[in-house]
Image 1 (tube, rainbow, N blue to C red):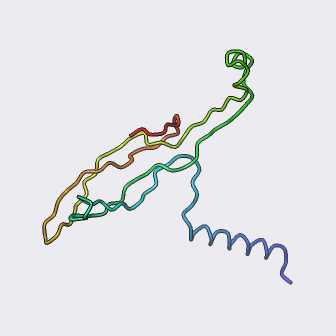
Image 2 (cartoon, rainbow, N blue to C red):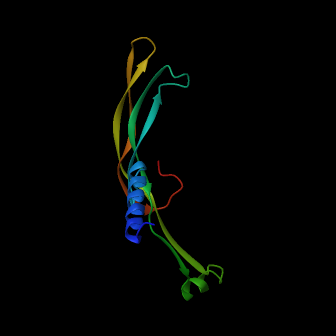
Length: 127
């Protein structure tokens, strides 16, 4: 039977190997690349692909009992106060995507991609 040190070492090697096979989980809010296919129209007459950037990650949130002044002002209906932030795009940049069209014709199209991310107020839609 293997010693406890050998078992711990094997588990550590297994955990590191598993992590190498997957994308490392990064805490916070950060840029994340993804491939996007761009088409000039619904028929896909011209199309191309580009590596764009998105913002992904985790931001802080908390919930706590409301202060007495909040309780009174809300008629005792707002008994829990929550504060949260969402991972959002704080800066955009335009990039040009080369589109290959039917035949040998080429077109160029500009799209937006994230340039910077930050934890900020949560909104349904900003763009």
